[in-house]
Length: 290
Ligand SMILES: NC(=O)c1ccc[n+]([C@@H]2O[C@H](COP(=O)([O-])OP(=O)(O)OC[C@H]3O[C@@H](n4cnc5c(N)ncnc54)[C@H](OP(=O)(O)O)[C@@H]3O)[C@@H](O)[C@H]2O)c1
Image 1 (cartoon, rainbow, N blue to C red):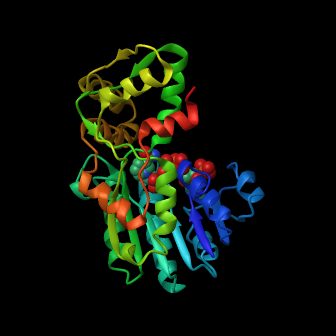
Image 2 (spheres, rainbow, N blue to C red):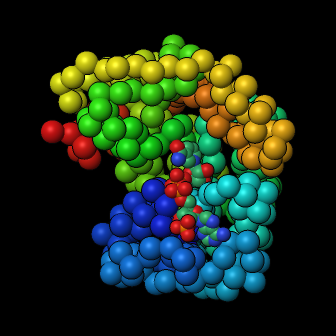
């Protein structure tokens, strides 16, 4: 039996759909407030709980062989850090066969402005030291994040992007990542490994507007405020709401740095998991293309 956390999220839903297509027994950890009927219709066992409560995590792990941790949220201390530590402790107690942790590309770069990046790295270390069989996946930005931007572009022609347009990224197909997360529990070569997970193309941010232009056959109107404008606004917000200022640290980190996989890293993924990583253009064509 698989336990999937974050099962109503953009990645988690895809993991559960795939698991149920493969007819795998799957328990999903969901909140009462979230939309989980699709998962129930697909035959997943629903566990209602809150990842901030250790007692819920203990109950959810009962009888589980595989855990895929794919949740996230605004409270990095409670969700990205503590909930994963509690899940790992329970996995050890339950003798779980394999633990897949969705981290983030760059988790090991020591970005101090982002509580999420710091939490991911600390969880990675804890998992490695736990004695469990594990796979740590460090994805770049998910392709599904671009669906609403592509739809806005289709309706208005506007492409909005903050900061340096030469910064590189390798946006990953969220569907490919879901397949990799599941396959990690079964493929020997993925055991006790860390993988950077990105799409096949290293894209500059300006390339994304060109992809939109090709998809919808219209010239982009690019609005590109500098990062300094974001910093100024953040400083202003900090005077009124220091907590919000802090939580903007992860967004600032993502805007200021490059997150891409090398061709060697993509080849390693493709050969380990025996798949061809999908390009951003192909992903968007499937979801919003004309
Ligand atoms: N998105 C990206 O570009 C990206 C890039 C690299 C790594 N990642 C990592 O990949 C993972 C999945 O990201 P995502 O974009 O798919 O996430 P997402 O769409 O934001 O989904 C977050 C999930 O966590 C659940 N959750 C939040 N608080 C919870 C709580 N207290 N108890 C139980 N469940 C809770 C949410 O449930 P509700 O439906 O109840 O809100 C939702 O299912 C995260 O670990 C994220 O850090 C994401």
